[in-house]
Length: 81
Image 1 (cartoon, rainbow, N blue to C red):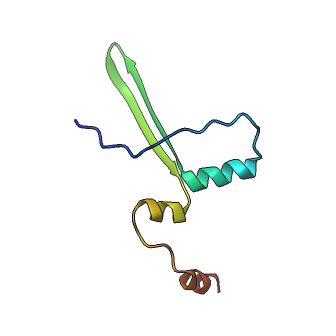
Image 2: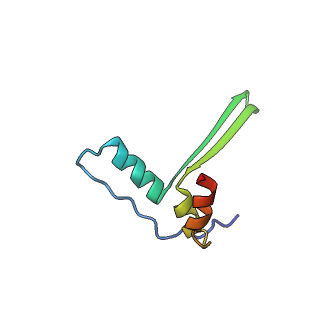
Image 3: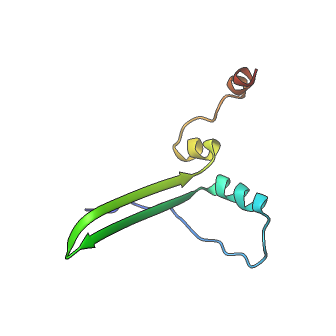
């Protein structure tokens, strides 16, 4: 099966410590995907297989990456009222 083409992804490393707020802001701005898969087997037979994919990203970033228009601020104001 052919792998989908990946965007230009890069990893930035910083040596200075960051506050939890800075870390959360960066995760919501850039996004993060956690992918986990576990198998439990006996004698070469899979007894249990679990798989989880978790994506954490802000709605604004998701819309931008999906090529959709941004949320209308007037809509958000109406929902808050």
